[in-house]
Length: 233
Image (cartoon, rainbow, N blue to C red; front, top):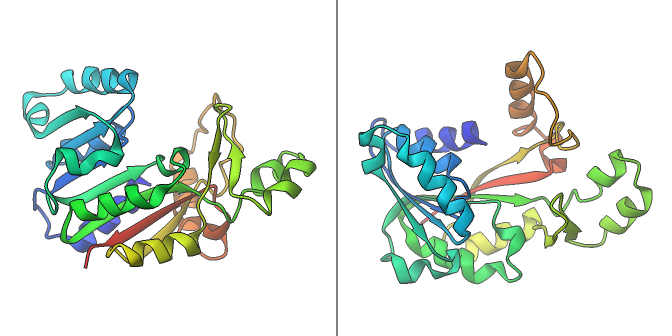
């Protein structure tokens, strides 16, 4: 996903430009820190106090220049209008958040308002068109059969959450003024790997295969996750 995001940033903005980045639901700050290290001005917004503490601890271990380029705010991603003015960011990330939001449209509209004209909105969502893949490959036939007609599922944390369909999000992004520009699949072949699985020796080849599948039909359409990139008109 990081490679996909970098591809969109490089293709959209002049090389060397310091971008204003907002990471909504940043978690432990993996992408936020990576972009701050790349020279961008990054704001991370996260409502989970534990994740905020982890992100701040990681940031504290970075060189001063990187610490100065990143700020962390504890708050709800649905309240971006409380914290920031419209058009304040060139790039807005919202990765792994929508599955926990029962009504995502207001959140998405708020994220689009944060974008400057020509800005990039990056979403990572559970693929609602492929919910039967994981239980099917695991031999859970009843679970696979039930997954065809729903966008609800239970994740690996045991939480009942929701997925999004590509067609629906394409329509939503057009409606909020940030129409879909590109989309990718994420975790096409590796979704069923155990959380504690040891990385293979040839991990670069694994990543190359996933990256290729994530941009190639029909493989990307059955990925566990979808990475959608919209552009503010």
